[in-house]
Image (cartoon, rainbow, N blue to C red; front, side, top):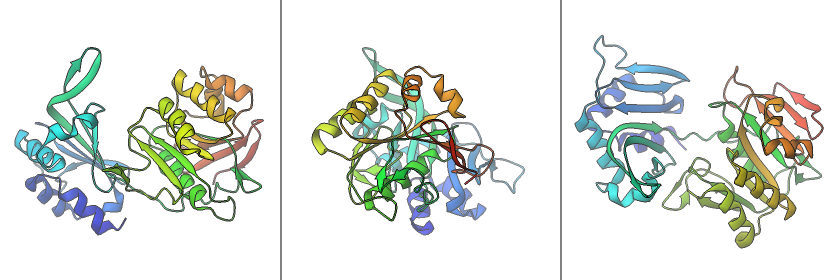
Length: 314
């Protein structure tokens, strides 16, 4: 996505006064990651992986007002938060461009289920970033005879695993010198992989990809297998017992799996309930471990099913 287009998409949802503050900072939008608005608190952004309080050049920092938050919500929801009730019960709204708006406030319950949010007090605008080609260095290691290997990406938070898995999906779907293009089914429970807006993926996830947006991972994997017959299934951030069972079912159905999980290394993952059995049974053929000490997406090592290192420090 061009920087000018991304800038326009973000500015058009911000209150005019907040927009003016950001314009004065002369930001490069490819480096802007988050904008955090909290009523009565300073305006904070995450820029180049560093938190900044705005305006930086002024001794007096801007405190976000209730009116500014309300105006921003009006722009985000096109003046109808009610129309976004289904998304809001998950705590976020996805807008054009795949940018995700997280929010907190008073939770309204219906039985034991979250029905909606009221009295919104905080907004976190997460700016979508695609890095086309960021998976180039790993493709030769997660494919064999032009077929995909069952692959698990292991990563601490904020290390670029979602960006990496998105580009892996794109390359598998389109095909290249390492893999034949094939049908990919994506379960995007939190709208992070495709960044769907009105049902259409805003991120490039390939020409043979079918996506279930805002769908629980376990149910979504089964649904895709039954309805779309994917050759490859991709899910982000697995962990629950039902999700592990769905992974096993998909493997038994002949689907290749591309999945990710929070963790620091293969040893830690080997101790997690559910995943431990899959590791011991050598169900995953490749493990990609990301590095939290370098730039986002940096690969510390890639292992085979036996735990042997295939490469390191990509």
